[in-house]
Image (cartoon, rainbow, N blue to C red):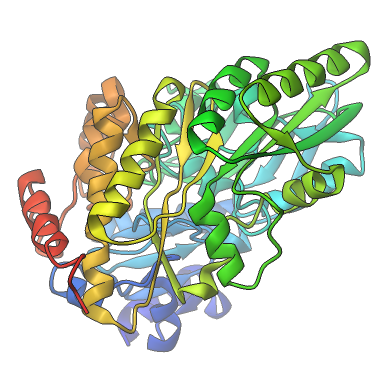
Length: 484
């Protein structure tokens, strides 16, 4: 327990917003994936303190204090990712933003809603639905993810951010944001990024290294007149891929792919699984003859490629389960997986390579994929068990295999965070240099979520080179097939 730091933070934020107890700090030393103890040799994942600011003023005071004292700040929502972006690597202060929540205002004329960054996405959707409105896009983790958390996630790169429900029709996360209120690493508060020297999009997908989001203004739209879900079984995964590629031109609101391996995981976990070998679920929105025509075209495409339409009840059940991509976790009892994007044209090749990798490693990899803007977002998963510590650690080498494959095929790992920071140049593309320059100019003491997004830096302030990561993962990979 760091009593001195606790006293200083308590003076700033009040006793109810600060904790340095080990039992509480430990909850902020990982994300959805367990962190192997061996990582403690390289990273200090345990924060020295946890704070829960509940106002703009408190956030600003906190950042000014951290900047003056060179203390790392790690912004955190509900930490619904697995890439290490929301816990420390140098210790410091975990900034739990979930106390900063609520709807600030709704502007029906401008079709925008302004919310606090710690607000849960599902709460925003419920608020809007009561008023006949909805969002253009939101994450598949909407029941638990915060607005700021998803927008901050690196996704497919700075200026784009995440892919989620609605992306295949309306674009990337950044395309749904009108404005931000942020606190810069210096402690300067920008009430409106849109009215400043910066561009709003340039703060989206930054993995929390540029600023702490305080408020977010999102685009809203009327609830669709009709929303209909359809599910199709394919006996051959290759034919499913062809059907998805052709139907992408219809710009569905949502499209989900689950292969035989993924459906098998669900069965093992005791979950209800539809009578399908490989499943695709499509959600279309619209009204009148236009929607009817799109539905007819969808059915034609699916049937022409060997798809068999399942009942409306099954389709509605699959759509209702869109938020629970990892509900079969208990079959593991842990899940390990990668997350990456690849161009829609490479869908068939991605599936082929993932299955080939599974065969080579003597494991089952379940494929979960959702349609993006011009890409598919894949979340291949492997059942694992952290109690078999060495086997669990070696399984992590699969993430590199999947990331390398995505880059080879013209895609990117999803979100830089800590573990994907070796691919930061690929993820952020031409925006990478802008991000580096921003950090140098606006965060000279590197207090804002340091050691991630741009590079993977150890607790000793040494940036690990990409070849070291490759060498380490190769060594672990040698044991994947034979580790016990």
